[in-house]
Structures are given as structure tokens and as C-alpha cells.
Amino acid sequence: MILIALGANLASSVGLPAETIAEAVATLSRRGVKVVAESRFYATPAWPDPSDPPFVNAVVSVKTRFSPDALMKLLQEIETAYGRTRSAKNAPRTLDLDLIDVDGRIEDGPPVLPHPRASERAFVLIPLADVAPRWRHPVSGKTIEQLIASLPEQDRTAVRPISA
Image 1 (cartoon, rainbow, N blue to C red):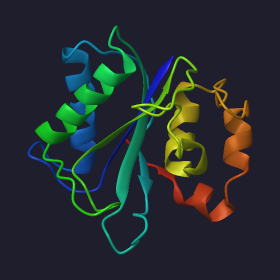
Image 2: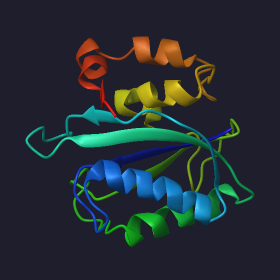
Image 3: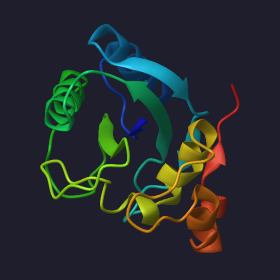
Image 4: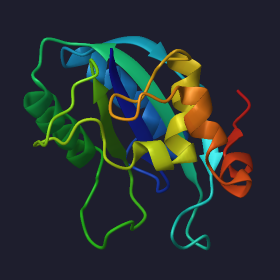
């Protein structure tokens, strides 16, 4: 199973963050990445500066013949196509695509697998549970439920589903 996290908190050329994420998922499909499952969209406060616009987050499960490195390059191309510029770390962005897991591989990279901070991020884990409720972290072996439960309550409750 290949898992990709999506996030955005600035408008792009196609619209608001939720529209950008929906279009990015469609772009993945057009570029040889079959989307198998897609989480609901979630609203999450920006971090580290909560005064920045809130994020919209989601996770997709995909299938592809791309190697992890080639998939990562494709994700960066898609980010750029939707107006992503890399300035300061954790700055607001039109689109962020993170490769979370590729079939349970543990690799030093590039890209580092599993994503080195995914297990600490409610905005990744909560949508991930929508698409992969039986997923286990490849390094720790912890279930998605255990990882979510280990997060601070304020982080868990800050990730709210967006109604359709």
C-alpha cells in the first residue's frame, strides 16, 4: 500500500485549498498513479503559526509502478504545477504532497520511508485512518489507533472533518 498525504492552506490557480487538493488527486490519476481510496477532507489549524490560514488535509492510498524516488519527483512536479514555492520551512502553501509509506518499506532515502514525522502528526494520521484503518507504522509496528491515541488530545481534536 502506498500512502500520500495532501495539504493546502493557500488558494491556487484552480481555487481554494479543498479544490486544489481535489484537482491534485485527479492529476495523480492522469499521471499514472491509480487512486484506490481517498479520505475525507479535514480542517486543521496552521502550524507553527496558528494565525496563518487553516489547512485542508487528506490522505490517499494509491497504486503505481513508479519507484519511490520517481513518485517523489512526480509529487514535487505536481506541487509546483499548483503554485507551490519553497520558502521558509512550514510556510503557508498552495499544495503539499508527502509520501508517507510505500508498501511498508524502511529506507534512508531519498525519500526517507516511512515519512519521518508522519507518526507525530494528527493531520496525517486521522485522514490516514479513513483509507487504511489496519495500517501499522513500518518502524514501530504500532497500529494507526495506537499512534492517534498517543498524540496530545488538543492535536487530535483540532483535526475536524469538513462537511461536503
